[in-house]
Image (cartoon, rainbow, N blue to C red; front, top):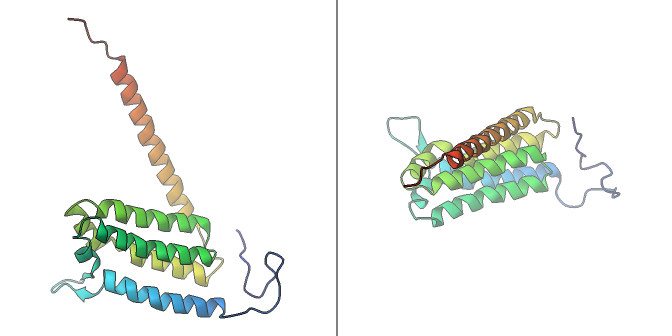
Length: 176
C-alpha cells in the first residue's frame, strides 16, 4: 500500500510549518462549496410520491451540448481539486470515467435526460473525494478491480470486432 505524506512531513525536500490553511480546513472549505453546487445540480427538489430527488442538471441538459458541458465542467472541477489533494491516481481515473460516462450518455436526447436523473455522477465523485481526501490510507482495491474488469471488457470487444472483420473480409463473393 502506498503511503501519502501528511502536511507536517518533509515532502519534495521542503520542510517546516504549513503556511496557509491546513489540509483539513481546505478540504472542508472545498467540500462545502462543491456540496452546495452538487445539491443544486442533483438533489434540489423531491419528486412527489417517491424517494427520488432531482436537481437542475436534467433541466440544464435539455439545452443540447451546453448543459452537458456545464455538468462536465462541474465534474472536472472536483477532479482538479482531488488531484491537488493528491488522491490516488486510480481513484482519479474512476472519477474521470464517471464524468465522461455522464457526458457521453447525457448527450443522447431523452435517454441522457433520464440517465441524469438516476446517475448522479457529481454525488458519486464527491463521495470518492471525501473518502480519499480524509483518509490517505483508504483502500483503492475496488477501483483497481473495476478498472481491470473494464480493460478486459474493452479488450474482449476489440477482439470480437477484429474476428468479425476478419470473417467479413474472408467471405468470397462470386463474380457475376
